[in-house]
Image (cartoon, rainbow, N blue to C red):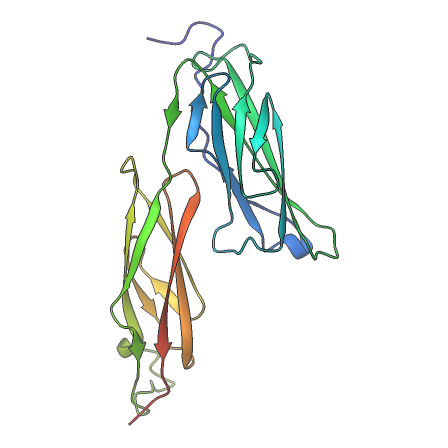
Length: 236
């Protein structure tokens, strides 16, 4: 059945990452709720996500329209009670709760900030999309030692296979949505995409190196896990 004349069908929006300027340029921020449609008077949660970044040292300030913050102000997650204000013109929503989050570093001399916004529909039916979760990261090796003689010649930039680690990410999603896998490494590069990739450390120096993996089901990155590998000095 097509929407009645003058009414628009609205779908849940994808969370967008935003970042600031200057000292805040490295802060990427998004907000999302597992509840993308609620009923008026419902209480629901909404969370901030900062992929691959520590939240310590950040101030969180939430503001809400057509709703009320019940708890959590000043933290990464708040509970909100949906209001009763109506927005005409939509077939599957009677109104919207508007949510905005402002994040400010505690020690920022530049007085910079990062803002993220989203909305949750109010309607007759409740609808959810659970967040995906990274369960574990499996590495084919825990440490690497290579012979000192195994150094590629300048004219041969071939990668050192002994310093390539297979990475398998085990993740879950309540609705079995397709997942986007995002990798951040302290050294080396990631070859491939998806749940099974190769971590190439052929040009990395000895030390402990870290890999972080997050998954996004279209609702943002809310789960990140970390694994480490030890790259030992060469030995004959």
